Image 1 (tube, rainbow, N blue to C red):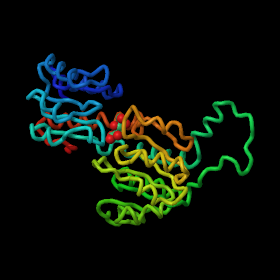
Image 2 (tube, rainbow, N blue to C red):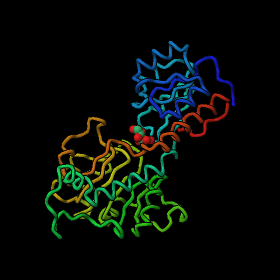
Image 3 (spheres, protein in one colour):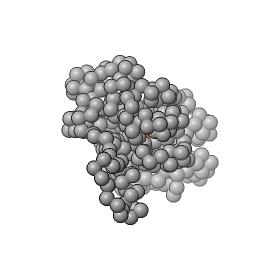
Image 4 (tube, protein in one colour):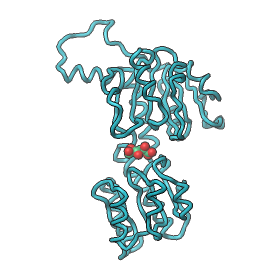
Length: 321
Ligand code: 8YV
């Protein structure tokens, strides 16, 4: 391992788990944010440090205007996340700045979490939890407070990338027929029995449960029309990006009972999400925590540091975007 460099070459612009911060200090003599930094703080610290070569991406990302202000010395912005919709990658490339992500560090943990959302939404986890916390005193009868069966139900997956396929693997253990919609059809070994439906509109009416696993693309995929195409009583899950969903339409579908329930980890606005969602009993809500395990978050940080190490050693980045 290289000796610790004298000059600070790495600015970590967001808090990371202890193991990651420790490695960043040890190997790269990194300076680490005490909180998630904004752009003036990043620029100020860059000046103070004598302009480092590397930034570990900040939580809210970098717009084109932010990137224009970065010092000439910056060679790479290493994002510890899978998604990079918070980064203007084109603007970074135009300035010769490499951008990397962590494409596989969180796959399995985010798939676990998505499956938890499916189970929690179908089996009314948040309502049952509320009942207990208010002090359960009245037993329920056979027809009361019934959930929706999960095993054997048809699961529709939109976006059959790493996380989508990891969710499909879990669903097979629940004997769920799997439909998927993707830009392109996967080779049979990756489909592993899942049925490709080229037109999302054709897939929706066949789904008992629909789960999103695609990156933000600027397009609202789940419009009012799309929700209406799901069968009455369907369950909707989103651990991908809130911008994929028309939340007014989602709220209407939950209020009218067209959707049985939803499980959500992501929102159009974060953290100041639409509080109407919090008033609905049939939604299980989480504060964008899909990747939040020690293992996944460590791996996300280590992936960013591995990319930094490669670039500082003059090698190509491992995970360029
Ligand atoms: C979050 C994610 O960034 O990697 C991604 O794209 O959405 C997540 O890992 C993380 O949970 C912090 O908000």
